[in-house]
Length: 322
Image (cartoon, rainbow, N blue to C red):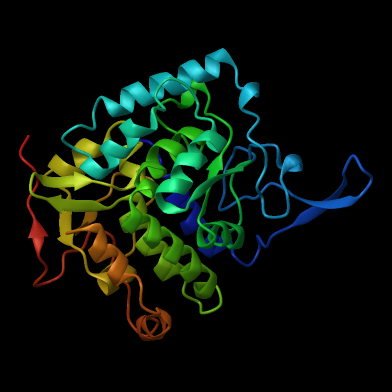
């Protein structure tokens, strides 16, 4: 069973739920008697499970305290086993930038203290980690990215969710996303993506931006001298999709093309049938730096491509040899 891709699902579902899931807040009283505004649980799409997380402790920007001392020994052990299980499969599959940064963080033995990791991350690329209680609305998500603050869910999955989880937890958010935030080019791309998301919400462009997020940040591949490698968080944090992404004959690996991606639909509940391949993080950053407003207008007049379709003339990468 594969790990579901929670942050990608979050962005996808916000498109459908945008009108009915505006940021909602409640008032609370601080110890000094002053009034404060607190976030309340945010849901996207449909689910039989109610939202998790203590939203009463979150501030108006949805950021909360991590309370690292509150994690139990059992939770630290579960995180350690998740880390060991995933990292065992990634050498030769994930890109060197991801593996090198992951190793340098020394975060294999326990749930990471986000404040401590933020110190070294701030020095490297100007980013910090923002603890959040769970799913947050798209405007809060994009605002944090634009400010170079990456939201990290503070709770950890249960044991029966070891290989499959619907919502993002601290393991997915940290293991999948944080290592590449130490890469200056990728870090700049994420900040630009946040600023672009703030604009997209005003230009009816969220579905196009969601597709970029899905096919790059969550499910991107990169071409290297050693062959194709993974950098997408939804793949690296999965227990089984890395092999599929790089080796499965039934998967298609297409050269990165911005507008092709923006027109491409995707599925959120199966292995991907199509992956897009960048030749460098510089290519990704430069392609996503321009103003998307004219692209949004142009694409609104064009049909979308179904998930898995191969278009005439596309450059297709062959699967890596096992």
